[in-house]
Length: 75
Image 1: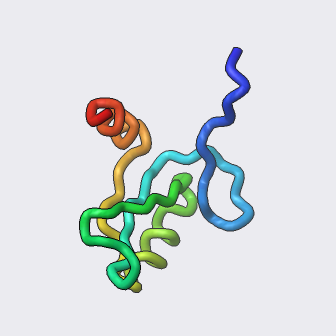
Image 2: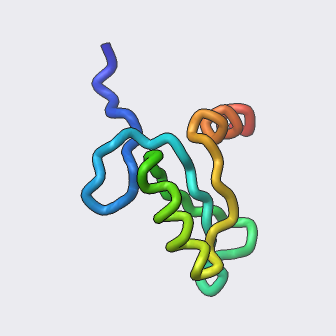
């Protein structure tokens, strides 16, 4: 049995399992290719996406499983 906790949502106070990866970049702070990530559960995906989108930071929303598969293939 693994003691590793599953990834959780980045929304304040939420402890639900993450299902989505929101890749973002603040162009005032990061190089264009840099991607920071927030994790989101189903309930908070839209809210977190809007928060980042309004600021022009949101670059991509990807299912967590797809993100992990992509990272494993790259790595």
